[in-house]
Image 1 (cartoon, one colour):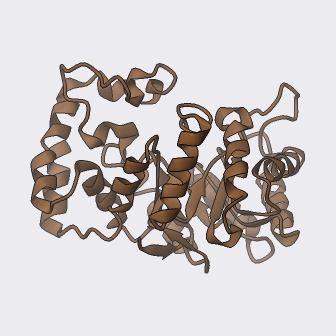
Image 2 (cartoon, rainbow, N blue to C red):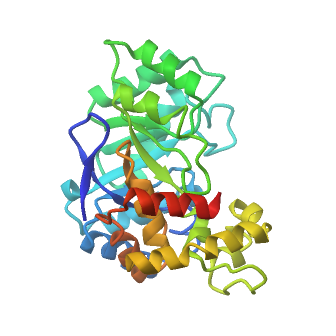
Length: 315
């Protein structure tokens, strides 16, 4: 496993991370999840990303139990705040009140006394940016979080946030966009801005919910144990599954991966990691062997010719 700094911060994250979205306390039972979590550690993964809203807080609770037998300093633990965690009028968003209450709740569920990376899950148009940034700055100063970041914020809000922070407040150090070979919208507006500001990308859905592994050939039945066959998880991939032309293009990536002596998934993760703006790819897994395969993508080098072939294949 290779490691990269989070933007211009000193902390280093594994190039492959493990995420809890849709899997822990949801698609997998606790013992199976524990096996996946521990296998990630064995493979050198140190970046673990969750959110308070995942499985209604149960993902954080599950990870809290896993962390009991792990040396805390070996983990870069990330979670998020924004989405509703109750029915109250202040139970969502990025107000100072909700951020502080959510942070304390996450700390309890995770059974830890600090969060390495605390992320604003989305932008809150109803809360002044200065209120949000100051709340994060206060949490850093109190030692409850070490760094803060955001996920899928519009570029203008990022620019405004950086101006608000200036030299007074702790600036965000991470951006978490949805990014893969099939979703490249963030490359031009987001990546250059964040690189200039010292903000690292920790991307999610790097394999497009498994589409880029090649396990969904067009016209074939969905694998019974796949995300696509689970109504709770397939909502985020239906548009791809409904496009047989795209699925066929994905199948044409197989010969390129074969030439590289790796899987299609590993090749597509390496395609992301070739960009120095990216700190880590957050991958999902329901089985330990999936963790192993994803982890082996770290360090794979793609030549410019291979990159061109990959991009032309799915264009």
